[in-house]
Amino acid sequence: MAETHHQANIFCDKVFHLLKAQRQEEFRRMVFLFFQLAGGVVRLALTQDGMQGQRTIDDYKSIIHGQLRAFFD
Image (cartoon, rainbow, N blue to C red):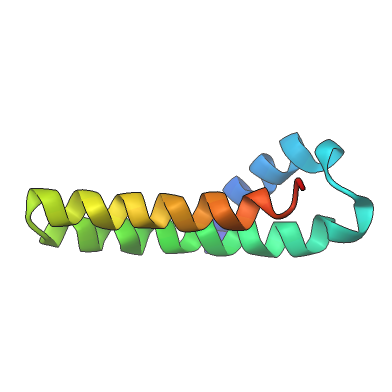
């Protein structure tokens, strides 16, 4: 968990200048959650057949992109 926080903080520090100050804490929480969930999504995809596993990864990426895009609109 500490490593996930560390990685999320590195990511956030690189993009905070693009965000409104009042959204930065919410963004940090969202990024931490995405980073934390990524491992579970990959583990799930590895248990699925090739096509289904790829769809799982693609769906997760779509969720992330949609959620993060909302911070930059």
